[in-house]
Length: 113
Length: 113
Image (cartoon, rainbow over the protein chains, first blue to last red):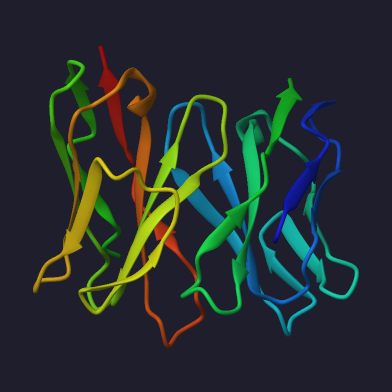
């Protein structure tokens, strides 16, 4: 059974720092991996999608990497800003499930001004 | 660009009442997913539809039912509501033959009193 773990559960850093959020999964037979952002009580905003054949994706100050063989993904946020404060969730799409997502519990990120 | 539209955004019901949530996927997307996210929890997969047919079933209670209509919009029907049904309900859509990326709506917040 696929399990997704995110470490740390919470992270607080000063504004301007670079940071890394971690996501690990137990079964490497994934179709893709997505990183989402969720503000309190709000919807899920897709940040980056990495296909299983890819190693990384970049969007602005965000860079996500994928090492499928070791079951790990990282989300790198450069030059953090207070507006980056949110919960970040990673989710893997199973190979034979019409893209059903298995979610991590998220990392709650606080960027201090 | 058009996104996934969910309605209503907020809904308050009493125990044992019924509720219906609606989802309008991104145009030309052929797959719809429903997720339930309880307070402080990660989203849980309920059910999905591909081309108006149920494709996968997750942890959807027997009191809940869903369908996808000819115009591809989907409805989640919840009966005999319980306090524990209070949650944020997300709908997502994707195009099966594309990247497998799921696009989420803003969610419908159900509160059962």
